[in-house]
Amino acid sequence: MNNQKNKKMGLKIKESIKYFNDNKSAETIKMTQTSLGAKVLPEMNPKTAGWYITQWSKGLEEGKLRIKEIMIIKNETGVSLNFLFGITK
Image (cartoon, rainbow, N blue to C red; front, side, top):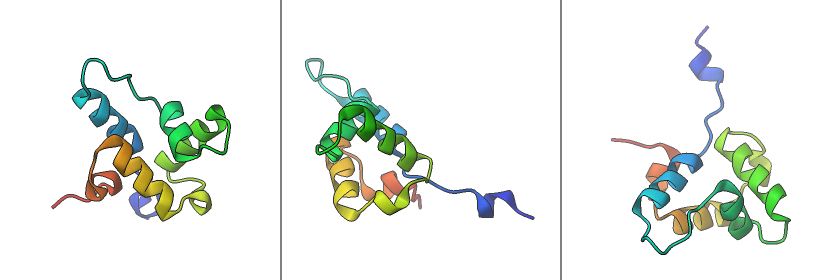
């Protein structure tokens, strides 16, 4: 049986944060999963919001992930939706 088929694929959030940090200006503060989580889920405490970011990057807790959050992640990190979803051509 193919294990790839059963493996959950999460969003490329860690890679998106790395892209942001690699391309930010010198005076811009480095982004972390916690700081991104605070922007994506401002109603939660930053530690919990960061936990959700980690879960989404692993393909877990997908029920909590909506288009609104995906677009905030995309806009905050500066990546394309294709990059975020790992779509390459």
